[in-house]
Length: 96
Image 1: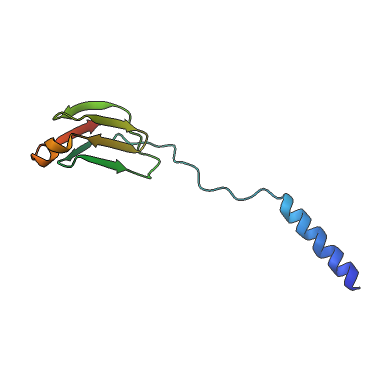
Image 2 (image 1 turned 90 degrees about the vertical axis):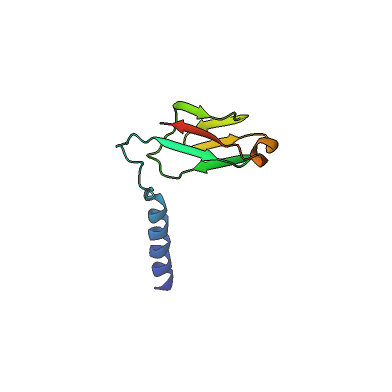
């Protein structure tokens, strides 16, 4: 009797492993237009978002003289010379 119970439990375990796993919630299909204005007086700064509905991909304008200017999906990186930052200068980026 014990071996029959063990065999049934083993078969149920094997069958359960063949079932499809639950998947995480899919990304939403609705996106909203967002404009981000990001300014800093630091020598470098970054802004990141984990919201899948925010996709940064179009530069509108830059402020100051940034020597690093990168933007992409969910991330903005901006930087300036350390001397400029210590002098109080600011750099910025406007993206959609």
